[in-house]
Image (cartoon, rainbow, N blue to C red):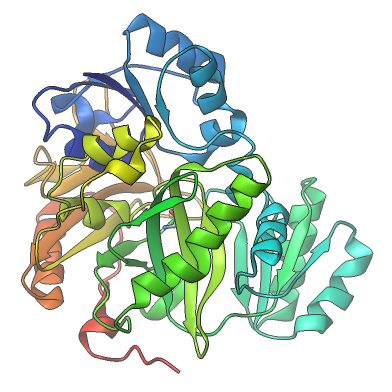
Length: 420
Ligand code: GLY
């Protein structure tokens, strides 16, 4: 089967590695990165332009298109592909509003009776102070649009919260002020096809740039799965209390969801409360989650794209744990320095290293082209062993000025994650 994967990050490298387990597939990726060339033909595409994606899919006679990032989904890539008769994995433009508009997601959750933070939408600067007062510290200030995981500020510093709200409004987007949800966070990826929901393994990512959750928010600096601290039945609760009611509400509204629904939830005293939805696989959680999936990835993606998820046999998982540690370029997230040469071991082995912001310079050397450069992967019988293996991989890679967190999964390993 000829498959086109859209995207260029560690998530898409993980999707390609999962799809490549099926020997019948012929993979193309666009725009891709330097690490993907061993698994797929790398092509160029304008991910913001659905017609460009359709043109490439037609040119290579793609039988399935898998959309990785949110931007093409929110732009309507799946609608354009389906209109052209090409099966696609991902939600339509309207359904992707669960990620594209936080206000829409709140409205769906209210109708579906799903627990989430209280929120107030603010569109003019004069309303910022009153909204900050309404919820108090810690302040949660979100850009009500797509911001690549960097639109959220959670802080005790009122001036910082206000400055972020002013910057978002100044850039032309509404702001969502929210009450703070206390409790450890879970990322649960759910395959959704209408009202059918199939969860993957629960994961947790580390969003802050530096150890001990210090520094600015990032797209994600590392992740691990499954979660040893999650109460028994935790996944089922998120499916029953969040994913299924939301899927049913979307069907009721005439905009059925098809694709991957990423439930970001905080586990509080009452159980899961939704922090956010994403309309796609998360990055970097996808990297460890898919590394434990034994079922060929094509099976679930094809079942969803064909509207036959309910017929899918149970997913098979490897036992144990997996972890990923993100290598970030100097200056990430504020001003990542690109162009640095990357050397070391494991760079051509997608079971150990998944590339994100990498390219080739004029001399063919591997260089950093983005803030999150690559992901080191590790697996093990215990979480501690999986994490140690991931650090062994990252310690064997060199990029001048690069940084990475040294405490991925550490609170879970040390038993420091407590539930109320
Ligand atoms: N890991 C956060 C995200 O994918 O948005």
